[in-house]
Image 1 (cartoon, helix red, strand yellow):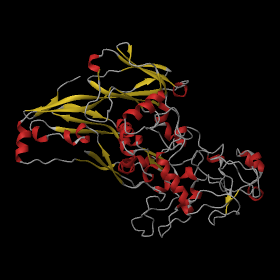
Image 2 (cartoon, helix red, strand yellow; image 1 turned 90 degrees about the horizontal axis):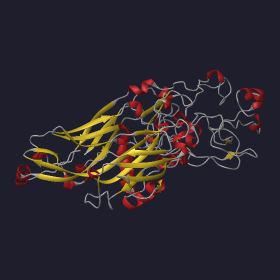
Image 3 (tube, helix red, strand yellow; image 1 turned 45 degrees about the vertical axis):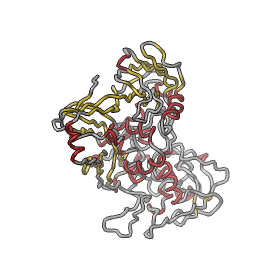
Image 4 (cartoon, rainbow, N blue to C red; image 1 turned 90 degrees about the vertical axis):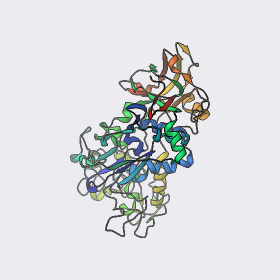
Length: 530
């Protein structure tokens, strides 16, 4: 069973920079539950879906799964009004390649596989024929659009260039830090449609009779989650209010600064600079690798705002030759430059004819960093000029990122991160006052346990402790009966970067457990309640 959703588009591309936050299909789902006869049997969350897929998905499945849930450059990379139209309705010359930079987000159909017990094991298919008197419901809660979409009217606190000085921003057009730059019109979008895809098993006459008349008992897996807990100190005791035989515990500690959706729309905040909140960043630092073509060279590296030509080929498949001033030491962007500035490709400003050193100093530039003839303003990124006909400049040694290279970097960065460490420094589990194990480093739970018990090792910050040898399998291989435990606590020591000063974080602990689903006389329910 899977959820099918269609994202809309259509806001004015000329005024909006926008992207869907990472893993749109998972982020879209706040929670989803299955209900039989009015009784909730299981409830899962988009956050849990991401964590579970991080632990269980094979490398062979990942590429297709990313496309299903919309974790692609077309949706999660920032649009830019300066880019050309892509596959226009009346423009047969517009590029159709998926790698072409976009000036608007396309309408997209997402497919999000659900993870209930009957979705993952065909032997546990839900016998609807035996539930004549009970209705089966799937209840789905979606997140509001402002927790899924990031859309602004400017990527910079400075909204315009100084007259006659390309690349030099006008202080009079500088927005005050904290100003709202949200593109309100983009948040008026809605889902075009949502539906469920269900795979059915059809039975012959004798099988239908047996399923309808005989009682059934299924060993099922459930998810338990008692809510997140806010923490603001280094040492914490998290009470585990779980029941039933638990296969494993999985927890994350997420700094609130990673998911401050409101501040991400305020000029010059950290999340504004990295293009939105990071709901699946479970580390103690912001991911500094934003999903943007701009991060790999800026629009100046995307020829004419569209690096796919009318023949469907890269206009610039090779790297540009560059002229690098003597003594230059490069860096990604200048000290006074915000991330992903639309013009940070390295403009060449001839001081003698357009602006003098005093004027540059008044604009906040370090004049000691101005060198060469024409002078290069180092604050604006890589201070080189190129021989590309659309860029101007003089040829020389060295090279820059090509259009083709920009796409390679963009695609490979979808699963690359430049974030922090596991917020958990050490952890210990206590059951009825007894240590289940001695205090262990956070790396044991984020690296060793997943390596031993799961298909893959997850992203940094996802912590696991398994009571089962093979927790992904339906066949039991070990549990801890939390119904017999009066007091269970998870003791965590968190990193300074997570809770220093006034910083706070949320701790979320999930547990997977066994239960029995009984179906008889046309009705179904759990054998063991909480």
